Length: 373
Image 1 (tube, helix red, strand yellow):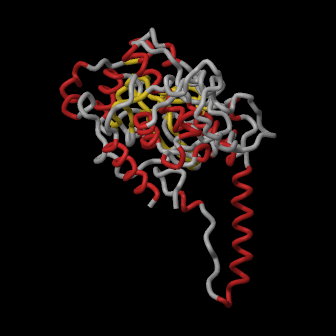
Image 2 (image 1 turned 90 degrees about the horizontal axis):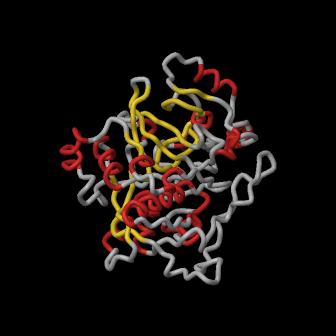
Image 3 (image 1 turned 180 degrees about the vertical axis):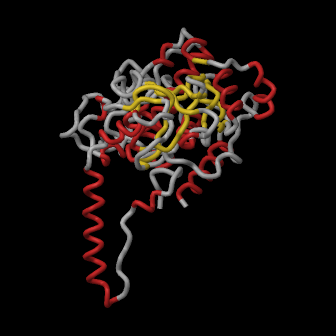
């Protein structure tokens, strides 16, 4: 069975069969229904909770501020879970590694040269895409947004190519290789799609969920859009609009390795476990204080620094600017907070399709099969 996240085992939250033999079957069914109703009630409760805000803000050592984010107002726990669509691949570290720049040896050698504070927006000011704050809408497409956003930045950094790339292409056309679309997907497979199939521009294939909708009253999850494979504008060519990567690799979990990759080549995609308190993040350096585990999330990592004596990663979320610190957040660095240093994915941008991506496709397919086991 494929779980929506590999960071934590969510089976503990699943209803369990209480049929304990013929003589206890009726009792088991009754208890099972009560448990199911209880769990359903938990899923319908608001994700924004005053008790969580108080617990964080009254915690002397929290180091971050909590509040109610407009983006999530009216959302239930169930609604919020749909935003957390990143699935963690298994066994990828030994299959795909950075070929050179982010190797442990290179990172260690460059460690003393890495700045204490770094922001990709300042290093590459000509690339406005780095500071874009997007909105995945009512779809668990964070895995696609994190990947496409990071590749857009890398295309600009490497080639001064400012074409905005399409999350919709990846979400709709990668198919089961990447996962289940709006119900969740794998960042590693997303980057492999960039190499084998490429990704078109946003003007060619705009994101499907742009009409906006406020809770309550929205469907908790929009269906995955249909893959069209042609541009919405007749004067554009699907094939000529494509951008690629020439390789796909994971980085880390060594902190210096991740820092060196971002400093040298640009933003990367990271995945981590989301707990209910994260929905309330407003400012400061986040770490999990309280609240239930709600799923896996993928975002773009653009820098690092230290605040109040706490090292952090600087990340870009895909829940628009009415969430968090104007759409950004900081999270503890060097402690693998919520698993954020476990699966860091990137690739080398390319204007043309590579000739022989099969070894990468095979390795990623093996990883996907392991994740589904």
